[in-house]
Structure formats: structure tokens, C-alpha cells
Length: 318
Ligand code: 13P
Ligand code: SF4
Image (cartoon, rainbow, N blue to C red; front, side, top):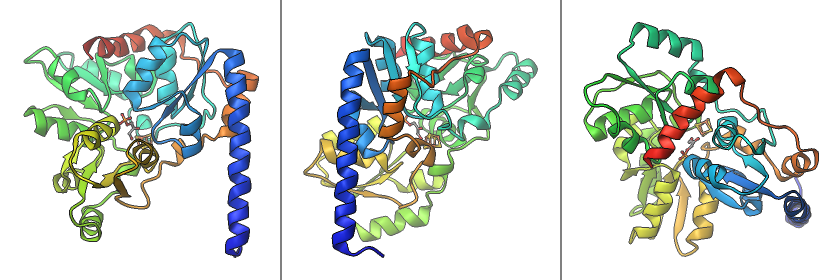
């Protein structure tokens, strides 16, 4: 095991490396007229090199509105596809194409198409955590930030199926008082957070407010003070008189929270709340993709327009 001195010099050489990478990225980004959009579950150093750190909706909006020629999307692949769909003329780079979202892969286009054929009356609402082919089979998309508004905008009286996240769908059903059918998908990261872990975190930090993502299980949501998407959590902290918070979502959000609210205390609800796919992007991969202008995101032509339509419907509502 390295001594404290050795490990602190290892840390400082790692920090130095990251600073050098960041400087190179910033230079190249300016030369190429590129913008770096990072999800708030990204590594701290990636967040610090980004032009914007936000939730999936904010990334989509920024990708749609940017004047940059190149968008580097530091997030999982559905976020990079969404950027391409909303701004087709730009080059969209995804530094690690293997950074996919396992929940998105729980809904296959073929199964959604078959469901639609059997249930032609049913409206299909897709969480943005879906593949482009599934968005193409959907009536409208939503994110955790706008799901309630999107669902409330639907034609009344029509049956609805929500996919792929059964936990977010169940949360919306209860909150709005509706009865959407739910696909059987889930986020493997949020799903692992247990009621026992919330109780233990409350015992360790009495008085702290508990905020969890609606991708958590209903029992966990039931024990929390609030269920909020990542931006909802940031907004809630900004307006809350509370000083201490237990955060039930991916650990990356704590970097953003600690940077924006240095006077507050944040505890991760459980150590295992880490999405390895989000974490598979690093500064070296961002620099490489800016140098090579690869890997580029492409969406198959046969689904492009339909997938884009489901997304733009969402963007028009909020
Ligand atoms: P947000 O929509 O809150 O950014 O969450 C995206 C996500 O992947 C949650 O696990
Ligand atoms: Fe997908 Fe969950 Fe990772 Fe979000 S945290 S990208 S939903 S696996």
C-alpha cells in the first residue's frame, strides 16, 4: 500500500495531468469552434472542462441552440443521439461510444412496434433514455425534468404506455393520478438503492433532507422527502432553508452541488450510486475525439425523421 506521502504525490501528478489535458482541450475546442456538453453524472474533471453541465433536458436544449460547429457530448449514447437528432447539421462527437445506458436497451424497437400494432389506440411516451429506433416508434419523448408536463399534455381519454422506466412511470401515475401502462425497464444504478440504505443514511445524518431520483424504487421514493430529477435537486437545494442533504442519485451530481453550494453539506445516499458507463468518459478521450473528429454520432436514416419528431414535440411543450 503506498504511504500517505506517496499517494499524495501520485494524486498531485494525476491532478497535474488533468490540468494539462484540460488546457489542450480548451485550446483545441476554440480552434475547432466546438462546445463540450457534459451530463451532471460525469467525472469531476470532465465537468470542470465543460461549457455546460446539466441534465438530459438541458443538454438537449443546449445542443439544439448552439452556434458551435462541433458538439462533444460527454454523457451516454442516447444523449449524443439526441443532440444529433435535434441539430442534424452539426458534427456530434461521442468520446466513448461504448458508454450506453442499460435502461435504454431494455426497450427494443421491435417489441414497441408490436405493442403498437396490437394497441393502436395507445399513445407511447418514451423517456429520452431510449434508442433512436424506439423514439421513432413513440408519440412523444420526455425527460425526468418535464415528464409530468409531457404526460399532462396528452390527448385526454387515450390509453398511454410509458417506457422504459417502470419506476418513473409509477411515480408519475401516483403524482398525476393516472393509470399509464408501464414497460418493465429500470435503471440498474438507481434500482439498487434500498429502503434500508435510506433509513441508515437518515440515522447517520439526522435532520438532513432526503432527495432521490424518480428512477428509484417506489419504496425508496416513499421514504424520501422529495423525488426530483437532477436539475430539480439543484433547484430545490437553491430554495431550501436546509443545510444538509442526502442525495439518492448518481454520485457525479455531488460535484455540481458542492461547487454551486459550498456552504451546504451533501451525503451520497449509498456508495454504490456510480454509473460505470457515465464514468467511462475521461479527459483523454475528449481530447482524442477533438483531435480526430471521431467517433461521430450518426442516426440511421430510416428512423431519423420519426425519432426527431418525438423529440421536437417534447421541446415544443417545455
Ligand atoms: P436526468 O434526466 O435527471 O438528467 O437523468 C438522466 C439519467 O440518466 C438518470 O439516470
Ligand atoms: Fe442509464 Fe442509470 Fe446510468 Fe442514467 S444512471 S445513464 S439511467 S444506467
